[in-house]
Length: 167
Image (cartoon, rainbow, N blue to C red):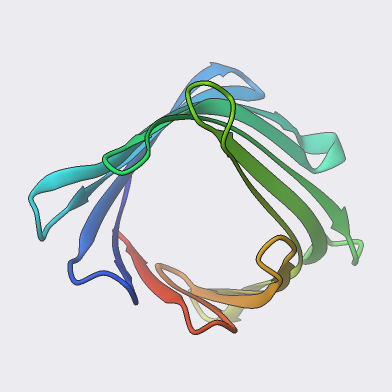
């Protein structure tokens, strides 16, 4: 199980996130993840998704359900396609999208982005770094991510940010 501590600019409490991937076959897994809000002591959300990877095409697709206390039950579809910029795949151009729907498939919340990702292995001894710079197409906002081993900082040009520490 993967666990992390998360804090966002619009939250007043730390959240504990847990994710488990259960293999279905070599390229498909059931992904379960959820979050506990330490301020309220209650779960923030729970998600179950079937994800299929196409490693030879640097592509992934997922379909699932998401439950949270604000929007209740929602269905979601997500996909990501990577295009290597370098032969060693340390730099990729990624196109990704997600759309979630309410229970009646009426209300839609699309998210789509294009980004460059640069993975620097052994930046320093025992230190890997990933830098992402992208543009969210529906919100029309640039964003960036810096990840160093267990720490991840995400920020966008609208002033939103979040910090994650993987345990």
